[in-house]
Amino acid sequence: MITSSSWAQRETDTLGPVLFKDVDAMRDWVRHRQSAGQQIGLVPTMGALHEGHLSLVSNALGNTDACVVSIFVNPTQFGPNEDFEVYPRPLDADLKKLASAGVDAVFMPDRMVMYPDSFGTHIEPPLVASRLEGLHRPTHFRGVATIVLKLLQIIPADMTFLGQKDFQQCLVIEQMVRDLNVPTKIVRCPTVREADGLAMSSRNRYLDADQRQRASAIVRGLKAVSAAFEDGQHSVSELELILGARCAELDRVDYAVIVDVETLEPIDLIRQDAVAMVAAWLGSTRLIDNQILRFSR
Ligand code: AMP
Image 1 (cartoon, rainbow, N blue to C red):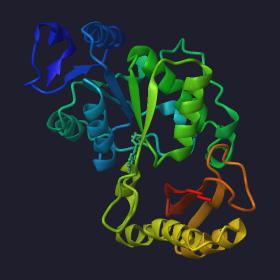
Image 2 (cartoon, rainbow, N blue to C red; image 1 turned 135 degrees about the vertical axis):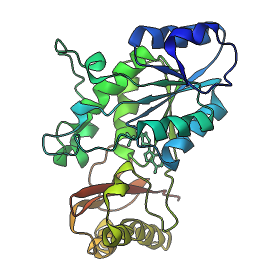
Image 3 (cartoon, protein in one colour; image 1 turned 180 degrees about the vertical axis):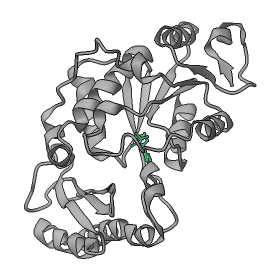
Image 4 (tube, rainbow, N blue to C red; image 1 turned 90 degrees about the horizontal axis):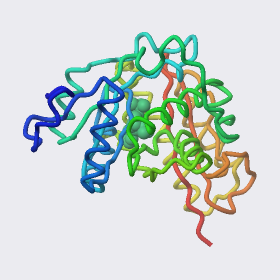
């Protein structure tokens, strides 16, 4: 690992990613690379990295000239009773994973760098943020939109890589980027799953053995919906019954619904692309997942 003070002297990346904690040094590095004609890819994360994050990294490495990963557990996207304090922060392990993945730079600011005491401006996210997650986590997307825009001001990446696992987050950020003319291309990457189909998540490590086993009911429900849809069932109430029945194994379900793929508004019948969305609890762990249902005439 090399620190930000010496990056300018370094020509090749044999020592792993350059680590930045400072805004100006990070921005200078990006500008330096871009002025040399390089395309920059950004992968924003909260750390506790797994194969899902690393798939975004390999997409970034494959589609741009240099990949920057940000690691910042963003306090403003957590609600007052959520897991901000206990969110896993295995920094050494994360940096090792990023070094072996061939990442060019890591941005890892302290909280006070991103949110000094004087901080006071927030992004008001678009309407799509108010549905589903927005009902259960009312300030979540305001925090997400604000931190992503801040990151893109510091790391003006040509392409930004997001996971479809956080489907509503993709919609919110895509619209923010369109609405505010942010010059980056958003690339949605497929959800990476465990062997039993459970979507990889930094929060999976909170699950005990019994919860871990029951957690796969989410993906089994989504697969059952997808299969019924492919067999011609287009009634949302029927499909939601199938999803709800599988989700009965979970401790509590915040939502298990099929909605419009762009607006996330409720629908009765699938006449165009839709998405099945689930948020559910196992003990004190909340997991989300989704499955797009592609309509073909
Ligand atoms: P997080 O660290 O949870 O904020 O996630 C950082 C990025 O990784 C987001 O764009 C997520 O959607 C993405 N991500 C998280 N889990 C997965 C997964 N299982 N597969 C693909 N992308 C993921």
